[in-house]
Image (tube, rainbow, N blue to C red; front, side, top):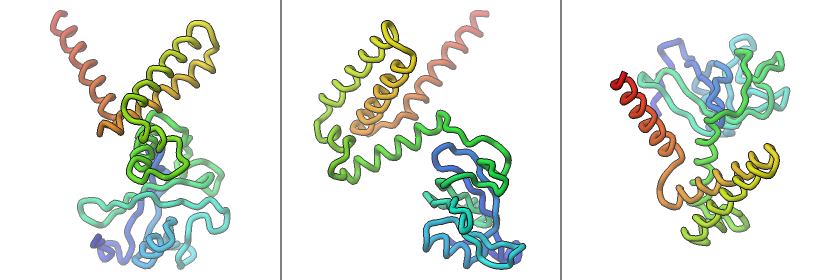
Length: 207
């Protein structure tokens, strides 16, 4: 990508976002050399204005930021870097430089969906997910049903912990099935959103 380093005197801001949680972790600045080193080692590297040198995040603490993707904005003068942090990001020990928690939320499903799709493309040997894809649609659908039954059993005669465990299994197998059909879990969220809004609109109309 053709980045505009001249606009800010050789530097461009780089927003770092957790690739899994979608939370913003920190903001730093890169010059051309820092950007190129980031691409080379696949770890976020800034130009430190206080140290006046390149600085790979985590070079002292070991809390590196492993790059997942790099995108530029519409003016090519700002970067959005999605990364996976290896520990707290802030020097204060906080998970982010904005003193926020970086807990996993519903956004993790997108990360998991991407992971499952990667398995589908690469089909690595020894992977359970690979074995599911190789078993065929009927077996994958059967696994969703089996996990759904296990969830019901735990909900009615088990514990909440086991219910959550089996429900997670059910959702995972559903995502594998979706992937085999060329669909994504976000499409299910969109369908629920449309259904919710339709009901709301009809309710408002009746009132």
